Image 1 (spheres, rainbow, N blue to C red):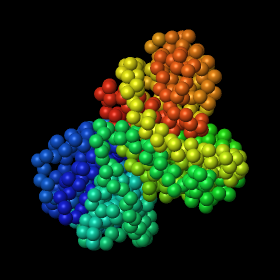
Image 2 (spheres, protein in one colour; image 1 turned 90 degrees about the horizontal axis):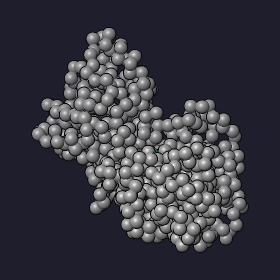
Image 3 (cartoon, helix red, strand yellow; image 1 turned 180 degrees about the vertical axis):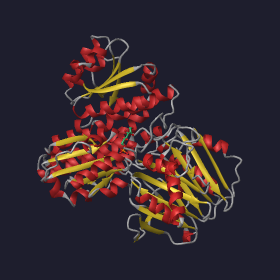
Image 4 (cartoon, rainbow, N blue to C red; image 1 turned 180 degrees about the horizontal axis):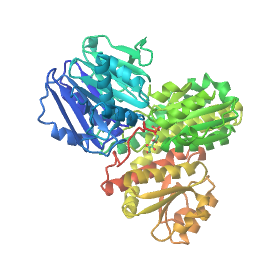
Length: 616
Ligand code: F6R
């Protein structure tokens, strides 16, 4: 978590740094700070609160400086306050650092530094790191780059850092291990941009270098960038990539919130995800990551899916898809549990890792563990060039475009889209579905984007339902089969942005415990689509009704039975049961969104959360 930005070049650094922080605020938003230098004087400001608070207190700082670094924080060590905010300065006042990640052995280093006379203002691991670099610089009488490198060889943990030295006012040193860092390269190396992802510099340059783990770079205006390995000091070839990102993709485009924009982008995002990967009327599915590794998938004893949060819910949908359509056994694992419990991985197991950001620390660590145990690991990521995309043996991008709202929306539906295509491809190759069944699925899939659009147009009833239940303190979400994971996802969306307690359950499990919670104050959101064990779900609804629970049901259009019993119904268009999660998800996202807006919550930046969880 945390976002870092930086600039060194010929332009005013302040607007680049502060606007960059606004774009990275999804990564953390409990405090923010920046440093700007005009080659002589250094101006540093930091504060608890949002980037807008930082902007407020930096109105007066001289803006001529052409070097700057900035930080937006998600607290790990030390509560969010002014002192713990970044940048941090070394004891001499010469070195300035911003850091994303955690230094695990900071306490040992801190004690050592205290014994040498250092004192500390903050509770952070980052202040320890900057003083450690200073100590090494003094002791070894070396330059900043070397001191950073030597310090990092002794550090345990994860970091993306940018360090500035007042004694060397024309360079910034950056380094990475476990947390992302992108470097934008200007024309003739006359300027460099630093950021946790490329969005802060998209309007300035399309040339980007993504540092790999264990790499360090020294950025000097007008000089070719040099990237070296921290451990063995070897220079590595710099791989300058072309950025596939436009400004309008990272702006709100007239919507009140990124979340609403991203909910509305889903029809396009789903289409972009399957575009070029299927020809529906020919029954053709083409995905190079799968095609190139087809035998591994076909001969798989089982597929193990690892992910966190919403991506884990998409993995659960995939369990139903792969088992039902392609008859491959699937286990879905929380990455954070998988990595810590010595999992059994056998030959012919295939691991699929799912991650929107491609940076989730637990998923990344689980991938590394699976690889160590000899597994073939396939990644499904949204962010191109992300750590998980690079760490996996092969993969497929979701092509959802940037997702900035902290609550995941289009990432979920596009992950399901990719997973459905993979399941169908494997079903085709294994012969577990007939040609006509596959054609039917693909053709039905092509209708989904329009159906999503239609549903988004008629959100009046969803607003009305939100109005009725916005003051609920607890909610239940129930679904069966393909829609059980959607129930989990619906509950997660509500709790993370409105702070209303909500639980998702397989509908039939309700009678084994949660039914005790049902009374006239309990709203129960039930997914009751036509072909999804409909009669059984109807019985579950009756059980709730007879205990006076309030039923909000998501039904297939034309539904009669549930419509008669439920307090409110939301209709989805008719589709194949396996594809219903792509539709049933939409009203649940909207409901959470409207409830959070009505409660005046910060929809795009819910408390305590951050978009990419790069801490373990
Ligand atoms: C929920 C949400 C999180 C993420 C989780 C995994 O709305 O956004 O639960 O899904 O942190 O993130 P990724 O997919 O980036 O690995």
